Image 1 (cartoon, helix red, strand yellow):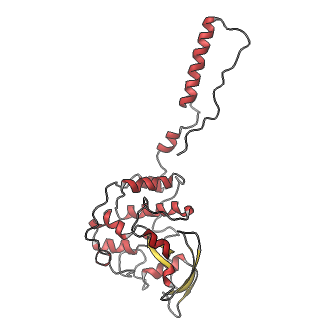
Image 2: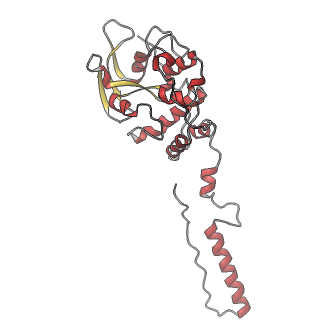
Image 3: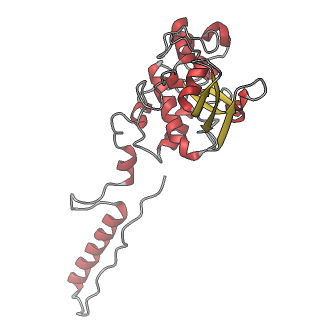
Length: 269
């Protein structure tokens, strides 16, 4: 956080007419009071600029990620005991959940590839399976040519913005099985990303990992906050602090929703 910068320093005016003793004492006192007012940011005028404290402590605008971050519960991480990806969050990329877009006869992985890749080509006559495309990777900022294949598909992976392991220790244990399966397949919680970057992230939260592409850190944190809100998950104190530091640079970052253009699935061909 930047400290307040005064617009100018106080410079008392000098009179060339010698002051009488009492007048001089009065002038000195006035000078000291004026200097104190400048240094403390006080002013007799109501039109003065807001202080740094007011800027940082003011109420966040409605609909922003910052506003919602202030509403999320803050708790310590629960134990990871009992976590099992398939048993607790269902079969990977299931098309039979309560998540938006589910039941379209296409698995979730290909749904997200179709949404996030450019120049998409389907595999043969399939109306679902993505054979190739190009990803502008949000995590690294680099372009990745995707080609479906045993040794090439992993170049682009589908990341859970709130990792399932992190979700488990921040409230998902209390969700129903159907809600956990929806969380694992919800387009709001899924982003196509560089495979190595996704592997590096693993189950880490925002206090432990952020995208190397700094221009995407604000949308990334906003997406995490949106998922936590939707599924009634909490944040740890360290996680909230890290999110807040990111949002300091983008206080008006909007909170994405199920109908945001970057979230909504595209129709298959």
